[in-house]
Length: 122
Length: 108
Image (cartoon, rainbow over all chains, first blue to last red; front, top):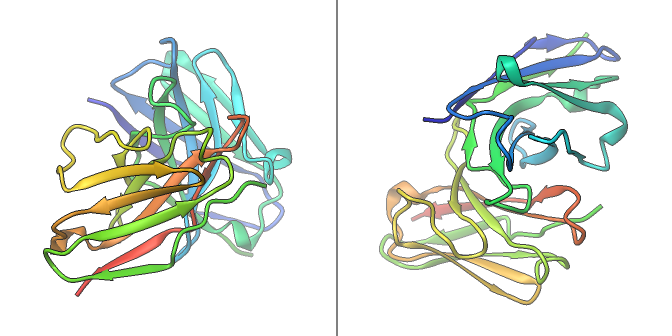
């Protein structure tokens, strides 16, 4: 079965760079049509679509955050890494990674990780 | 950037029907998806491609589309359906994804 898990720091300081890793199993990012994305949710607020990387290294970013986000994948390790620069307290949120496929469409997600809470504070 | 608008809340009695709308200019061109999120849990996909139901999702969940508005309908609402619901789609060119503002469904 498909599983995903997010890992990374729980606390970062303002202006620092956040690096989160999504480790997954049950699928391969070398399979045509497969992708992994990131979504975040500030406490008590709505979901926000952040970014997505496909098997062919096609990357999509939220235009509002594009200048701060970078996605990379390591197919051999079954991992996707999200970096977000210049962190601010408003970036405090639970960060989720999730599975997608071109069959599912519209940059949507069918399997989600449990999420990891990242707090930005000095 | 592109936005999807949902009502903040919907209240419904057990056994009745809940309807949640989602409005966006690109919805005539792009499919909509619906997620259910219960407190402290990750979202769960309940409807994909406007009206398709993933395996394991009860039949009381259905979706429809009309112009710039899509609707999630929960028929015969049960107490366990109390949750936040989010629509999701893509911008008109399919370049990036976007989530709706979210709707809290309360079962009275």
